[in-house]
Amino acid sequence: MSTKNKTREKGELVLRMRGLRMEGQADGEWHEIVKGIDLDLHRGEVVGLIGESGAGKSTIGLASMGFARPGCRITAGSIEFDGTDLMQQSEDYKRNLRGGRISYVAQSAAASFNPAHKLIDQFGEAAVQHGVLTKAEADRDAKDLYKRLELPNPDTIGYRYPHQVSGGQLQRAMVAMAMACKPDLIIFDEPTTALDVTTQIEVLAAVKDIVTTFNTAAIYITHDLAVVAQVADKIMVLRHGNMIELGETRSMIAKPKEDYTRELLAVRTYKKEEFAEANDDAPILKVSNITASYGKGITVLDDVSMEIHRGHTVAVVGESGSGKSTLARVITGLLPPSQGSIEFEGEILPSALKNRNKDQLRRLQMIYQMPDTALNPRQRVRDVIGRPLSFYLGMQGQEKETRIRELLTLIELDPDHFIDRFPGELSGGQKQRICIARALAAEPELIICDEVTSALDQLVAEEILKLLQRLQNELHVSYMFITHDIATVKAISDEMVVMLQGKIVEQGEKDVVLTPPQHEYTELLLSSVPEMDPDWLDDLLARRAAGEVVSTIASKPNA
Image (cartoon, rainbow, N blue to C red; front, side, top):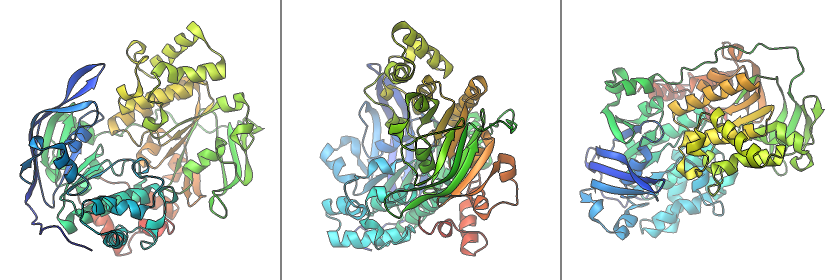
């Protein structure tokens, strides 16, 4: 690889923040959102920023680049990068650093790549513009990094467009792109939050390899202590813009000093109060021998059959590209299958969405993974929830207004405070609650929840799971819960369906599927769930290298 940067000595101070204060604008007023943060970061070191939604993690990460997103501003403090206070520099100076000496890896790779350009062209764009590499050197470095990050077919995968690779592959391609200029500092903003556990292992291993190989300094933003424990040397715990605790990873995991840190360590212990007993009634949804393809010859579902009973939750699990979301698309009519049938309450559903009547559409609703992209930013909450009330149920006027307020109360949001807000004025958890209310407005009998907690911090995710369970108990609605999070499966499901490469490899009652002996792929999924042990990832990679356990790469030859 090209090495045009100066020699880097591990331990050199790269970033120094002192007294950082920032404000954000809401309801036309400025409020302090970061309250006097100090941070030192050295080459070859990773500092993890952890906390719930609204803690200030991403805001601080972006501030390390001398950047404040729209609606935010830096009001006090210093941000020294390599000895230069960015607060005293021009926008042109800071812009020249970004993408060159400082890189940023966003949470959503799919939203960050230009869909009209090939991966390899986007890899080299910043490096060529900054004069670090020629186009030929950038292409060569891209293939080298793709190989280092264990992407399949590293010499050719760069010539694909973003939509032609899986989510995990795209996230690793973004890590590679961030390394194009061999930056001094990388900000990883929730890079594995939306990934399945097996792909998460690959990205975490890639992060550790990049930091070690190039003595790069890194900020790793996450809401998951078990994940950050695998890559961070130090952890800063944040809440409401305040630093709650800062310390070495091992000491913090072993003996946290603050109650809030202990609370973060204890999350995701929620379990359903009662197991919904299987019944002999006809299933509300019956999927029979479904085969589906994208384009010609690319089979993504292969002879898939499953059932969901009324009032039950069936979790569909599997890694990126296993067919989980494609199955949801087939059930909802967005992707007509080439073979098989979908029955809803004993009635065969038309395979294409356009051929389904309004009542068939109403009874089957969907909640999406990313509430940011699922909500129209120009519509107020009353419009988002009111639309299905008008479309499906014909409600207008005061009847509609009353029902919107009832639904907001049902999802535990105060109607007076939230009914006229725009999505941009809501937290991630509040946006997802609005998406739930929108689905409930149609009075459905089955809701497909597609990774609805994966983009949320653990405390908020637990609140959403509890809310969904309460709604199920009250409304007797059924859920198909698509997820890659085994903790979520244990928390909310009655039955499990395990998918791999478009096929169901195991299904049944949750407790039966999770109890050994298991299918080897189910065992792989369970073994890939990070533990609260800083040595867990290194030990797992060592055992996989020795052939003691199946590797994630080996499990998915086409990944």
